[in-house]
Structure formats: C-alpha cells, structure tokens
Image (tube, rainbow, N blue to C red; front, side):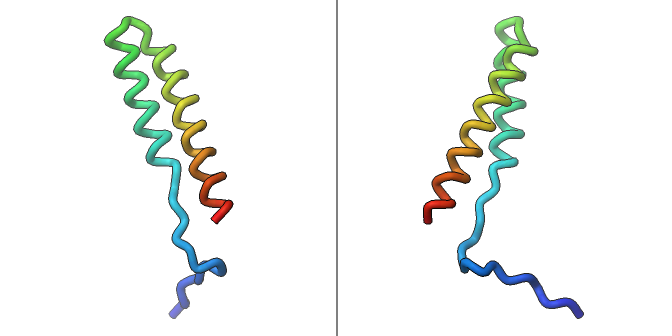
Length: 62
C-alpha cells in the first residue's frame, strides 16, 4: 500500500481553481444580463486569475 505524500512545510495549501471557475461563471451570467456575455467571461476570468495569484502570493509568504 502506498503511503500518502506529506507536505514538507506542514501547511495545507489552498486552491484557487474553484475561485477562478466561480468567477468565470459569475462573469458570464452577469455579462449575459447586460447583453455582453463574452465580455463578462473575460472579466470574470481576469478577476479569478488576479485573486488566485494574490492568494498564492499571500500563502507563499507564510
């Protein structure tokens, strides 16, 4: 049986993928209400990436 891989830092990493996915959907839906779903998709994607990178940078400092 394989042993689970241990995190050498002892911290539990957080993932930004769910935030990116949620903001893509939210941007598309919000843009759809405004008649511009493509722009909403791009804005949601950009916002998700910015937040995910910010989370990664903050976690990296710890």
